[in-house]
Amino acid sequence: MTSTTPPKQQPTYTASLIDIGLNNFQIWALQHPENIFSKVLLPIIILIEGLAANLPTYLDQKRLVLGPNFCCAGQVVMGEFEAIETALTSPQARTSRLATILLEANHLPNQDVGGRNVFLLALSDEEATGSNDHEAFRRCLQDYILNDSSITRQQDAIARQLIEKLAADYIDMSHGHGEAFFSEDKRGWKRFLIEYLHYVLFKLDPNDKSTMDFLTDLHYTRQGTLRYFAGVSSILEKFNIFGHGKISEMIEQAATIYENSPVLANFNEQSDQYNGMTRRELAKMMTSIMSIAALQGPLHLGQTAMGDRPLPAYKGRNTSEINPTHYWDELDLDNRESVRLYILECSRLWAPVIASHKIATDAFTVTIAGRYRTFPTGTKILIPISLGLLDENFWGPTTYQFDANRENLCPFHMGFHSVGDRSAGRICPGKDVALNMLVDVTIALGKVRR
Ligand code: HEM
Image (cartoon, rainbow, N blue to C red; front, top):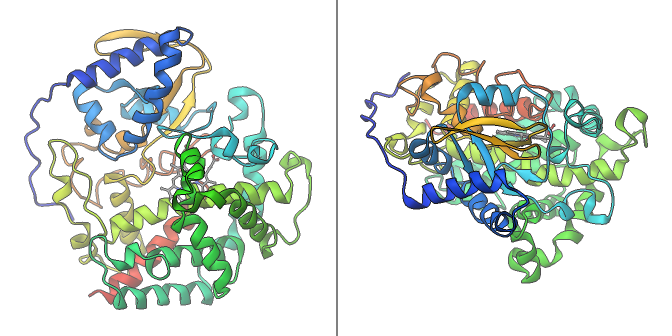
């Protein structure tokens, strides 16, 4: 089904002085990283613009006024489909970044307790830097947690009961924009994600109320994700905002829950194929992965697909006028593939993870504002997934409209850090679990709302 609203004629937009000034300064500063002005001003820009750029419309607006390539949050952004495709399917060197946001290295697992870094998203690929920690730790995660057994659990009686309970909550609770079903964390969408994902991934008992309450408190009520953000996390901890005064203790407690979970019962300590990863290290890695990845991506995509919030107001487009639930109500709910495409289209128009990053392992030249610019080795490069998903040169004139049956949606979707199923080994390992769950939820709730 295609949206019937015609695309707006796209007027030309000019960059503001702030857009131009920020871009020009960052081009210069990234080319001269050792200059005192770069050293003083760039970190401030990284911190502030890094948070702003996480808004879904920010990068799109920059591309509109500055052209396909520009600088943002201390990174070079190459916003054309082919450049993003190449970045997503090539080895990557990494640092402590989450998209445009700077992470606090000392809060990452297991650096927070003086151990080695086991945080996958901040570890480089072997081909890029020589160390194979990323590959080894990822293999460990997949052998124990994200594997065929977790996919099988998604179809068992316990998982089905959780979906039925969610459907009952949906009927009982108000579920319009920002209403109880989405905002409360004791019942509804968030509580479901805690119980369901901890069951599917760790085989924890979803009826163990005190454990589920604790995990809800850490990951959602106290917004555990923010523990990893540079600057913000220290302020939250110092002033005990959202209860962050106790957050590091709670992270250790959550790691102990994961460490004692049934899926890690027969853990093979210090195996060479996992570079000696210990059970505790894997559990600590999972506390961060649950907070940052597993409980955030599906939360946001579900909110979009179930109409909790309007689609982003991309400048000069009418995307925010589209209500995805109109398409949901027209779906053939007995056809899993069409439901899956519906979810993929929602995540194309509003990518739950807007970007990723890599570090240049060689000097490189790129055209910005009509001129060739060369950046040194070590420059941070943003991989703007959301811009790839919204590139009119690839998706055509209906790019900003809703069309779940559009050509190439599946094989060229970039939302899971890949191009369809192609990647250089960093495709989101939770993709199948997330999509299976979202398809099951969209079908079950779609049936009860009709
Ligand atoms: C709608 C849901 C989800 C989306 C859109 C999503 C998207 C992504 C993206 C874009 C990345 C790459 C981030 C980067 O490297 O900068 C990523 C990485 C990752 N995701 Fe997901 N994710 C989702 C759900 C999940 C779930 C349910 C899990 C379960 C544990 C998960 C686990 C991970 C892990 C472990 C990584 C790091 C992989 C690596 O660096 O090798 N994700 N995800």
